[in-house]
Length: 272
Ligand SMILES: NC(=O)c1ccc[n+]([C@@H]2O[C@H](COP(=O)([O-])OP(=O)(O)OC[C@H]3O[C@@H](n4cnc5c(N)ncnc54)[C@H](O)[C@@H]3O)[C@@H](O)[C@H]2O)c1
Image (cartoon, rainbow, N blue to C red; front, side):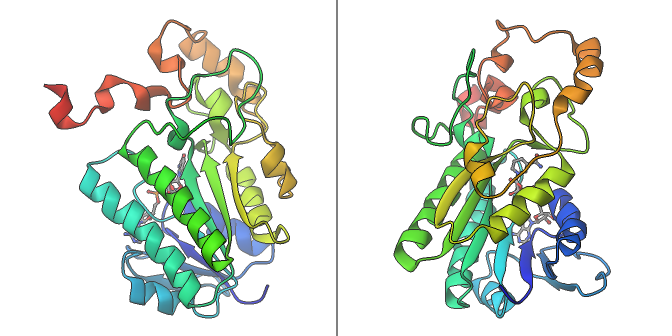
């Protein structure tokens, strides 16, 4: 593939990791964000645009080898904000790719597309185990992102790889992250694999490191060429000393979405 990777959300947490990591793997980056991305690195282009501006996105996608879509609201918010940034934004990214004749799009999905799924007592969950079970409006936006990706793959022949990211952080921050952690270097490896896999068509894969206590089957991600190097187990002793063993009776530990499945995340109107 020739041309740069158009990276949306380039000023964000994961975008910043990819701005550094993708060039190390041979990709030129065209970073785009609604806020200033910062000084361009050598060989990098940077743009300020809103992903819901279809004309701006289509112009930004011209000549790109692929789009990596990380822009959006990365957690729960009110419906109007989620619908605008995450649903309308994903539509615009895919439609811009189609109009600009960009053949591959990598989309940031989330484990919260399936957050109400029970944690398995044993064994691993596959991407296609059951129907989507979003835990929040945010999770609904990720189910919609995957559905839009499927539509653009089937109808227009785009390669679309959806990454159901667990918990991206320099180190696993809590007990849940012993299963859900995605390290920064594994993030780069996963996006690189999604960009390089020959003719993937439409794919949905879990985005986590090789965590000993993980719930998610990495077979599909590995089949793209993803070879995770990190395991949250290296942090288990410190986290267990800080928080104790997870109490199975605690609802926060019952479902894969963790705290997002609790009543604290009910919509304002439903709380009274
Ligand atoms: N960080 C995680 O653990 C995690 C887990 C699962 C999924 N994800 C997904 O990965 C993606 C990146 O997450 P992150 O942690 O880097 O989030 P972040 O908030 O750090 O970065 C998101 C970036 O998107 C930009 N943005 C927001 N709305 C925009 C718009 N309308 N137009 C253009 N840019 C816009 C923001 O300015 C920000 O720089 C998100 O889609 C998030 O849902 C992240």
